Image 1 (tube, one colour):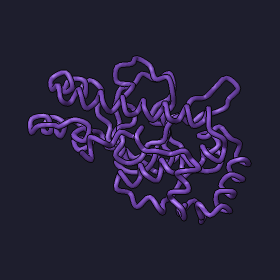
Image 2 (image 1 turned 90 degrees about the vertical axis):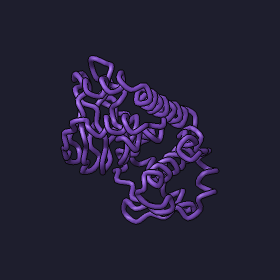
Image 3 (image 1 turned 30 degrees about the vertical axis):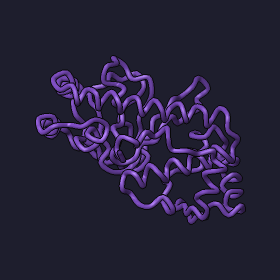
Image 4 (image 1 turned 120 degrees about the vertical axis):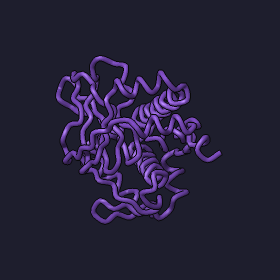
Length: 235
């Protein structure tokens, strides 16, 4: 966690020691297992060591909207630390290894060390930026563009997390889950992925995706990476 926060805001030796001294609970979640349910009182903030988890909302008719996907190295539920009740669900997408720190302990180090507080604040601001992009993607791009955009984002985030090059990656999601992410039916997702293949932008082998034309996929997806706000990390 200290490396993640130091990427957002510089941390000194005292701050890094305080973060490293936090009492984490290590847990492994199976695919489909809930880390947190809507209506629960949050007790922990989770750091994702490996695997994927996702956050989602269930609407009145039982439909599900996936609102974010987290990769290794993400702080999964930081936005819950000052709220009394979770307003969404957090669920493992794959086998996920998680370090869980009590919220009270995280709040204490943040109130004691200003640079830690600033890093946590910036983490939530970047997460909000991703949420805005997801809203724009589902609300204003057509099926082809929003699918291409999602593939570009996942490829870049995985690469940034050190999980492999953006040109080839595993997308551990069913077409139903992709549909719930993109606001499409599973059938429409299947057609759209096939169309991207036909256009020579990607190839697929089960859940493995190879980007054959990265610049073309970016163009179709109207994708630029500015909303990921990695400029501090690369400066």
